[in-house]
Length: 161
Image 1 (tube, rainbow, N blue to C red):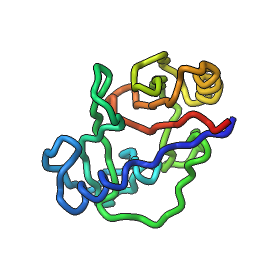
Image 2 (spheres, one colour; image 1 turned 135 degrees about the horizontal axis):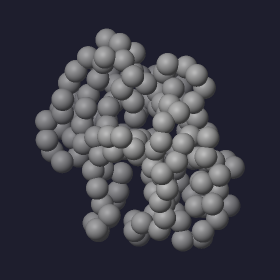
Image 3 (cartoon, one colour; image 1 turned 90 degrees about the vertical axis):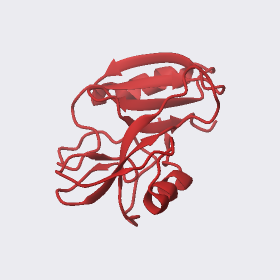
């Protein structure tokens, strides 16, 4: 199934990197990577020693009971590395894999950003669960979050018909 991962908002990246503020207008945390932190802007794990920003991010655009913020790591400096937004980042065995073989959560939302469905799963199940979610015409997008810490991982928009 073709998918489209929505990149993290450019205005958020600029505000976090330039003004040092996150989506809640709190100061961001600047740190050096220990290695393995999930870098949301490049969909890979951080390399040891990379300069990172930890900040609060909101992937929602309208007020409502499900609007929430999640912690994200981004690179402290913009990167021109190629990022695949057309496939789910399944584990390949690389230490830089964005998703490892650990449980994560997929939550399906309607166009008015209300939750429709959710499932705790392993990466190997992701494509089947996404197909099931998007078979429901009410589902507009799906959010992934890391299960252990609850950090925001990515947003997948409904495939174009």
